[in-house]
Amino acid sequence: MAKASPRKPKPLFDRVCFIGIGLIGSSLARAMRRAGLAGSYVACDRNPKHVKAAVKLGITDEATRDYAKAVTGADLIVIATPVGTNGEIARLIAPHLKKGAIVTDVGSVKRMVIDSVARHIPKDVHFVPAHPIAGTEHSGPEAGFPELFENRWCILTPPKRTSAKAVGKVAELWRRIGAKVETMDPDHHDKVLAITSHLPHLIAYTIVGTATDLSGDLKQEVIKYSASGFRDFTRIAASDPIMWRDVFLNNRDAVLEILQRFTEDLTAMQRAIRKGDGPMLEDHFTRTRAIRRSIIGAKQA
Amino acid sequence: MAKASPRKPKPLFDRVCFIGIGLIGSSLARAMRRAGLAGSYVACDRNPKHVKAAVKLGITDEATRDYAKAVTGADLIVIATPVGTNGEIARLIAPHLKKGAIVTDVGSVKRMVIDSVARHIPKDVHFVPAHPIAGTEHSGPEAGFPELFENRWCILTPPKRTSAKAVGKVAELWRRIGAKVETMDPDHHDKVLAITSHLPHLIAYTIVGTATDLSGDLKQEVIKYSASGFRDFTRIAASDPIMWRDVFLNNRDAVLEILQRFTEDLTAMQRAIRKGDGPMLEDHFTRTRAIRRSIIGAKQA
Image 1 (tube, rainbow over the protein chains, first blue to last red):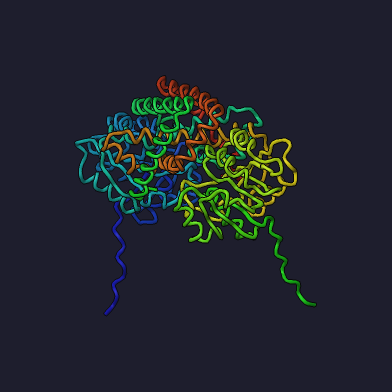
Image 2: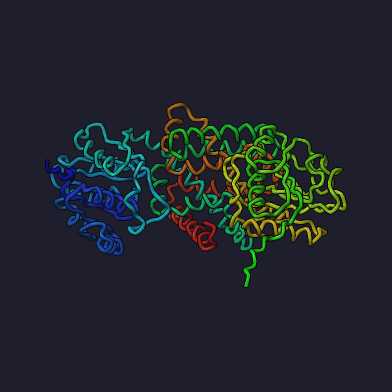
């Protein structure tokens, strides 16, 4: 009996356009290509170096700085630029979108992205907002790799009347490259991420900034002895400045709310240290261990 | 010509006593044993489980809860307990110390340890305070491993009239197990570590505490989506509660000073977010990347 040749899964899309081919865009392009999810790939980026790198590194088949040219004929458009630019990009590409195409994004903030993008999207095009919870402190097309999303969450926050078929197709895309998919209300997403991601980044940026302002000798020693805890913060605080500026400007209310709670808690710790309140400190430090155990239990560590 | 058999380096000590056989004590014992640095090893710990584990795991040759018995005959005594206990331990072991013995420690705070320990040490015994900058979020004798100190700094903060020979011997011990040794003024040490280690731990403990206080659903989602930045903080905030309580109680002034600066900087960030000051945020986030590069340049990343 002749052995059947292994069936190659059918591509999900004919032509995919990535607007922004940095860490996330280029990782997604690499992952999709490896999984055979589309017929062809085109990158569009304002940065001429990124355009050149996309083709040179074989991330996409074509690359251009021209939005109209890039999106023409594409049945999936992935906006992967800092969230502050998403509305303007939507406005620019809208007249050139193919009927029935799906526009998606990868932004860390969802309410503001939906509000600024959705109104530009033509009625015969589907908009499926998405946020893959993955990244590194590096940026640019060279920093991408196809395994970035494996076993990581991708949260979809489709507005109520979004086509279920379009949502299903985007979900399928993420699953095929190894991600786990969840659907969430955009406002709730922004609140959860303010705690798990935006506040930790803000704090890391702040403490590394505090160290940057130290005088020469002390600063050198902070670098030399960074392995004692500080180093972990510097990795987080090396993340892309423009991306993070836009996150804070576009998720202001949720970030300020959780920051207020954090500041109150920090003041309580400060008071405990000043007063020498050992039992309070010990009790607090013991409770935080339990959260770490939960994370290990949830296989997120 | 007969080949000379490889010369085994001469042990530095006859008998070493570890007071406290947790993560650091047991790692040091394992590393010293592997490097053949002493004739015999004894562990002393208040916790009967640790006493049992020390012998069962072959970390030391003997183990006891009796301080007098443990230090008798030892020419090196390593105090490796939370810093708040060091003064009392010094008082208890002092009458039983052998003439010419060296007492050292591994505490994360140096001024308070020196002040509380040195006055109990007999004139014919040497006290060489030390702080290996290494650790993990795990604790107990089972958590130790001999490679913990490889390529890590160990800072010695000997008071002015300490025997140079004794300091040299402790430095040699750390070098032989792979650490890099520096000497520093104790007050300066406490200031540097307040920035590189104590403040980062305090902040991580605080933010994880803030998350602990969230209501049920939100808390579960914070755990589920922790990979977005929060997770790094939970690892730090899982460190030993008693050890860290004692660090904050015993390095109060330096911690409160740097915490004050951090709070001012965080307030400035908060204001920038509230006012939508994009250029300030971008500028700050760009400067912090430079510190990360310095750390990579210093091979501490």
